[in-house]
Amino acid sequence: MTFLELAEKVLLETQVPMRMAEIWEYAIQKEYDKELNSSGKTPWKTLDAQMYSSMKHDKNTPFIKTNTKPKKIYLRSAQSVETIIDKNELVIEQKELKKINYLEKDLHPILTYFAFSHLRCYTKTINHSKSNKKEFGKWVHPDMVGCYFPLEDWKPEVNELSNTTGYSTIKIYSFELKRKITLANLREVFFQTVSNSTWANESYLVTVEISEDDELLNELKRLSSSFGIGVIKLNIKNPENCEILFPSKVSENLDWETINKLTMNEDFSDFLKRINNDLNTKEIRKEWYDKIIEKEVLISAFY
Image 1 (cartoon, one colour):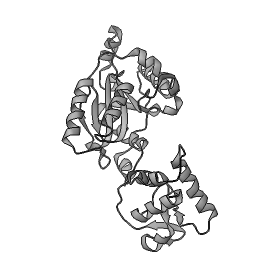
Image 2: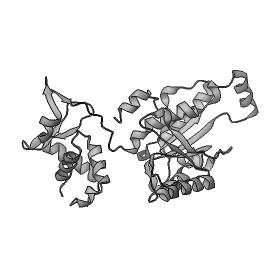
Image 3: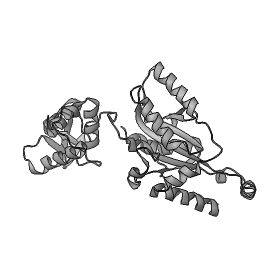
Image 4: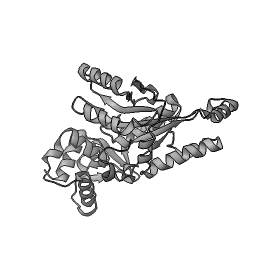
């Protein structure tokens, strides 16, 4: 199967406009990617390049790009069924469509919302491309980190006394995000979280989908209890209903050696500097952390 044939097959099955990432993720779920005649290391980039080249240079291409943002692709043959053209704008029939697939990075805003709403925590996304993983092995950095400041909850005199006595008034969180947890990937994703996150005061494995399997849930509960890793289940339909399935064990002490190692990442280093600045000025500069997006906007990104 060629990349263009794969894309056409996906769009024929779904019958709705899709983003490039959605097409590729759907293909992976259906295992169509295994039918590709390709050995490249970044097949999703090849798919992207070939589809845009087809729409730009091939007059007979079966693909059409929408005028909406973000750009989505649909089949020319579906135009009379699914869409109409009005004043050069593509109007898609009103049809509720659950986002068939999403990337892990799409979950970051949901976690940011939950972390602030339920943990009183300001988060920072860690860009792994800014790390030299070859220096420290496969698993190094968590996907997101966060900090709880009691500045907004405690009286000024209490904050002053805690600083004078040297009592740590902050709590640092570490989060590892995965789209789905199954029995097949449980041990890998869990021990990736152990490797990346146990340096923090609280560490969490975060996901949207967990297989409804008693064996999986029992094993996840056992691992959580044994290693102190919490588990958060995000809800993309209603971020208010995200929940902590298993709580994290709270560590009173941070692993400073690991924290020092993590500063090799620019985002993490900036996160530490930001915490220091906010503590010194006694003012939380929210704009330097991940933006907290309104619930309605978060939901609209998935539907």
